[in-house]
Length: 495
Image (cartoon, rainbow, N blue to C red):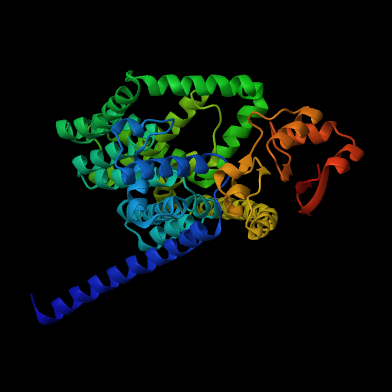
């Protein structure tokens, strides 16, 4: 190799490294800031943190057993975070930062996958920008949940499958299968894809994908004596949820449309349309060239579409069979990541075309992308505003703790509980609390509750009691000490 060729090669390597470092910083900065600045959304993230804290305590105490991995959720994300917290501490921020790092990895994989499919740097950078600057993806990358880490494993599996590294692809699927059950669909999908493309199946890869549900059944057996206990727990939870909320139990048109709109909101109209159009074009080419099989240049697109539509089909199947009563935006983040490389390909192809209607299609894709970003930015701003209102209440409670004595608080809001910084046993909530006004007041007295956080939410005992009280009864028992622009108020008890 000549001296000039060596210099050119090193310059190319430096440029490539600089690109990856720059992309990493662009994706990581907003996600790490979100992890530190935004509290978790209500519900599941705090249950994840609690599970991580319990695992950490048993690991440090030397009492950890494999049966402790059993729970409502698959355990790998929680276990990894628990291992880290044994050294660093702080389960809340560790779990958020693990998610943020994984979110950064998803963005980088979208860029790498787009380069594989499009062979175009500008189209790949555009796909990267769509996810790196996506408000909802940034927000969920800062939450203590397994959705974004699982999306990293699925996208990584796709990357290695495209590069014909089937064992590595299966290994990531196996890891993902201990994080979320959605990865179990690849137990059959990966061998089928490999056989379709190469007319052979890797036995090692198949056994790897099969290992995750087998390991989980072993954990279930160790904890409960029944390897299928997880499915029973989920069934009982869904039945209880449907009995509490009859609207979830019926496939009414408004309910179904609302869930499908949520799916489109997170996946993106442009992404879904691009994947459908690409599938139709690919099918048409396959019919015309049935004797030649799939060309090597189309392999990446075939695999990407297979991963995308299999994941979409699994989600819709779970929803319409009532194994998943509702579709949440975070469930579709993996679809957004898997579909973006296809969108990048469609943008490149429509932009290169000289025909008016193809250029119009390119413009439509861009408009839909801008519309999705604008709507999600609005919703992200609404979430930040809601958090700001909750901080007002939490800061007031935190100020009360400076007197050195413990305070008891009625509060159903996990965010306020966390931001207030009180010990967990300082709080009581609607669970076990009566909704009858007199009984509710007696309950507060018996538990020596000094503050009541009132907000409109389903099943809130405080809302039920206040709704049935007269204004005179409210003022005789409660003094409002903090309020926000939303319907969120803090009362001090005066009995």
